[in-house]
Image 1: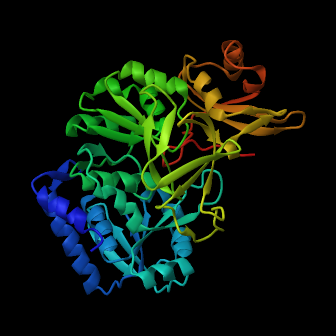
Image 2 (image 1 turned 180 degrees about the vertical axis):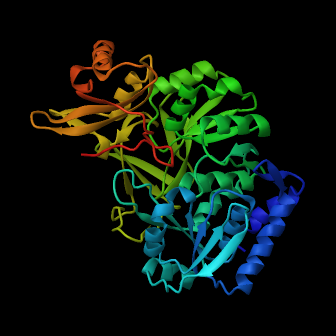
Length: 448
């Protein structure tokens, strides 16, 4: 049915590696059989088409086969990973989950009915159309998590065009639009899905070396952590050909340092949102933050300096919030951009913009400068209310040095004096040891 084109790919490439999980490899022949077996299981257990099913798992052979079987069964799928364990009851309630499929650490699955009857109008629409759905929750990094509802069919369409077959590490999470996109790209091209037990720099580098990973889709935050950890010095990363990055703005200093250390690895910026999916992107050059986004099924326009997108793969709406789309179907992304012909440079989220006495400050610009300071391992810049200027720039800094706050502030001001206007230099600084990112390796900013 819905995934026949994928099953055809699996059968044509039956001997090839499909999934590496805990250093064990499953072939495409195994995956094709597993999808068919789980499809029969769902039918035998009376999981009817249109059932809202939470798939509670991370990437594994069984979870991948189950995801595809649920699509085949026209289920409405709610992927939930261990990273949001505390929020699972809330998310199940919002999504009106009728059955849960939990995949344990030993890769065995357990199905349980919840007794809930889903009544939301968006879910009713899937049932009447006989189409599979996907519910993705936003990270909630700047507020309440929203439940975006997608028709799964448009998400699959673009993967019917053959592209490159690559051994790919699944860094982006199983319940993230980027993780779903990565998985479908790899499987539709008979590549190999390489999983990791956690996403620490050392384990990621070890997996790249051991399993000859060619593609690493990740975030600027992780790239910065990788560079700061120097884990790359202890592993052979010569197989790595391409690193794609998105989810947040890339600091220019991080981009430049990566290119110095890995001149043979191509960096490619991506752009996507839970609401519209992942757009095809083309960087102006490998060391440039300018990017052309769009592709078949996507339109873009700039309104008042802000990016808007219209897409065939756009979500149908939120389960727990009003529709964000304009009357003619455009999504205001909230991202401020500069424009150079066909190319865009993402400045940052409008919600994260710091207004200092009428002057605009984007956090990534300040972070890029501070990250070039000796001893700065990580930094997060945000705005805070100020009675005189409205807002002021604040910074949380993680150091590898033993400096006091007073010593660092003095050094920071001297360092920034000829690199940033005075209003962009942080007025308030805190030295921290805690991680500054969430489970999706995206900076967590305070918005005031």
